[in-house]
Image (cartoon, rainbow, N blue to C red; front, side, top):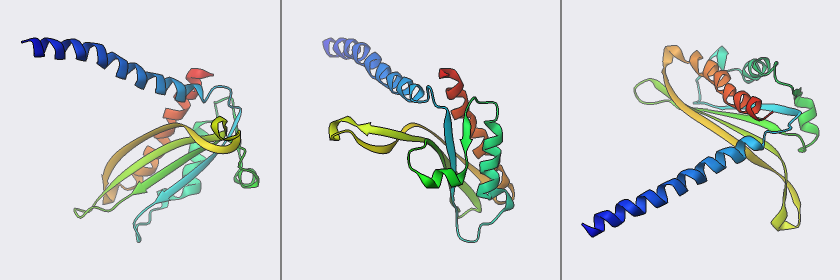
Length: 167
């Protein structure tokens, strides 16, 4: 009986601490979006050899995300500008599509916001780091592969919503 009481008491004390820590990390990620005035958008798609669909065109998806962000108070940098320097913040959208044996296509979408940072513990070395991250997974049948592209664009709302929340 004492053991059960101790476990109950211990779990009441420890559980909120872990929950608070996780919430603190979410708040830090959101705070990293505060004050951003420009960013680039980079889309990368990994897919099985032989899988081709016009909706999986990287430039089409990038343009659709750009269109989704048109009401944000930020400038979207061109690819040409991004290639000139690694000093610009970037929303990196990575899509990984796999082929399952039952003719379905599991996929994952990962969004990372990279920006220039200083590593204080390493003599203020400047580098790029992911300060915000979100992701999701899904699965589609072969005849619904175009849904992946629309999900990628829809997932960019995660960034947009959190950006709007802090700015």
